Image 1: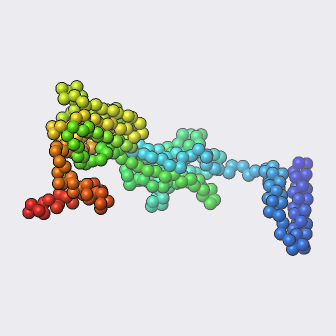
Image 2 (image 1 turned 180 degrees about the vertical axis):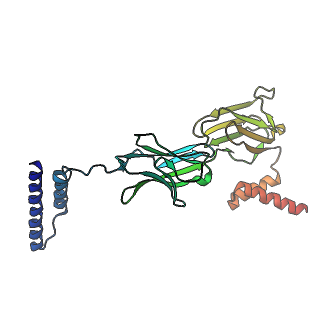
Image 3 (image 1 turned 90 degrees about the vertical axis):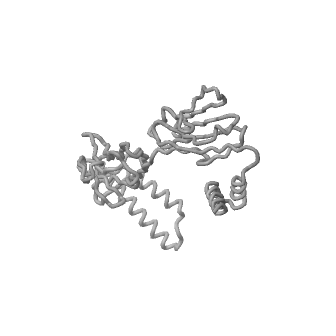
Amino acid sequence: MARTTAACLFTVHFLSCIIVCRQDSGNNRPRDQSTVSESSRRFRTEFLEDWPQAPGSPYFDPSTQDNVTGLVGHPVTLLCKVKNLQNRTVSWVRHRDIHLLTVGRYTYTSDQRFEAQHKPRSEEWALRIRSPQRRDSGQYECQISTTPPIGHAVYLNIVEPETEIMGGPDLFIYAGSTINLTCIVRHTPEPPSTINWTHRGKTINFDSTRGGISLVTEKGIHSSSRLLVQAARTSDAGSYQCVPDNAQSATARVHVLTGETPAAMQGKAHCTRDLGLPAILCVAIVILYIAVIVI
């Protein structure tokens, strides 16, 4: 009885739409857009949304990630959540070479770093990559075997931990001023437990009789360590190294200047100020210039 009533209402609405369209055509006047939109909205609400839906249409859970960042050498997992899968199959494809990696719970590729992961009666279909490398960065797609197939793209970015001393690799400091070295540690799986500093290959002793040496460390997504050496002396010159316990170290050379600014430094200042070149390039130009004069 309900189906018969719905069918009758659908027929009446359909015929009324034909009559309105014929009237509009006879008057040779376009219908108001708001009227069309309202009519379409009521039609969907009253008929289509109440009409019995085809069961089992699969779709991706909106919470499925679009971007994943991983670290070189550390396992990373791309996750895909599928609703109403029923008898369809979920696959993972790498876009770079259109390479089929997994089908269902089975790993299809011969690259043993890739692995399909799925728990029975779970909506999650995962692609796990053991020991990922920078070359694994790029777009991957989780596909459902509908006709035609539907997919959800996930972009993977594999990064390496890196350490940098700001302003390096050469820093020029006047005697008596404060040496301020800031070390930044990025892309580590977790903040470093310790960030040590060395001077000329020896661990800096903050309790030494030299005094005036302090350290400020902040840990987070990007961790930082700031080394402050007050009242710089010529003995403070040399190579300084920032050594986090979970990333590569970084080195900077400190030059302590006494008296007037050396010609090399004046040339560097002129180069960076007037020519707008990077400081490291200007230093190279000055060194080359001096070498040519000596020869």
